[in-house]
Image (tube, rainbow, N blue to C red; front, top):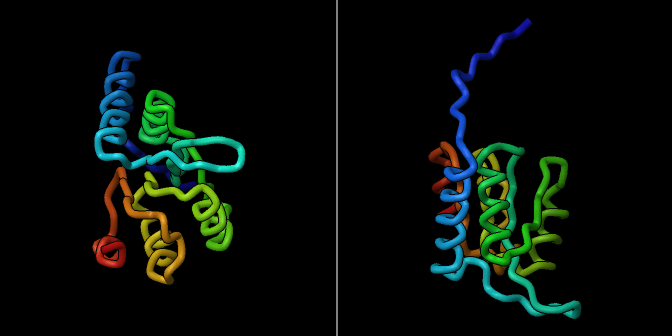
Length: 135
């Protein structure tokens, strides 16, 4: 049996989560990271979240709601072709992700794919090699 200890959980109240979500929402709007995209079904603002469920995922999702942005979720089970298709179909400019996902997105971008993508926001430690690839 393997035992992993993560440390004490730090609780947040509703006010703290709302403040974090509002701050992130304001950042997205101020820096125009989710521009209006016109489709045959209407006009939308898109952003993608690519991570396992966790606190930052929820805050990013709430930020999308507050900013009027549609969250396009990418899952671990998606292959590179599916990720490319989804991001290209929605003209996503910004992907919020966990550090372990940077390499997948950076490789697609380096291959000349996902042309609309210009920003990656990551919420934990990333490998230096992945950051260099993303540059």
